[in-house]
Image 1 (tube, rainbow, N blue to C red):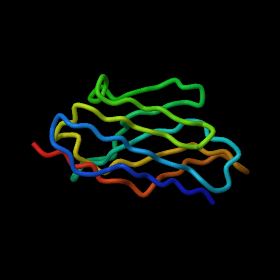
Image 2: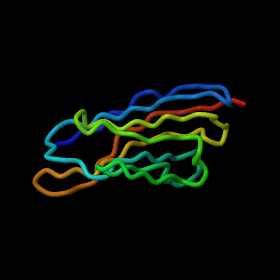
Image 3: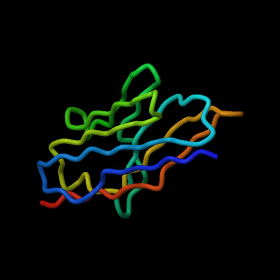
Length: 118
């Protein structure tokens, strides 16, 4: 069993910053890609950013230059530093990890709410 636990969400004014964290625990041999996704009310879940074990990153166009993803492999933790937040960033943010134990499988966190007020 693998658990992903996110933290760091909250309410912030437009232009502000937040830092999300996600810790993976449980039966983990290694973690390949980790990432952040978000889902706004009435919309589909969308990719925000991903990062490989080696540190290669990928971002949605809507967050490039404002968000930074990073990870600490020793702590099985991924971070999302969000700056210059906009009201349209309001969503539930989900952590994702491709975990290898006795097989390889995608796991999701429970989500953390980010609300940006105008």
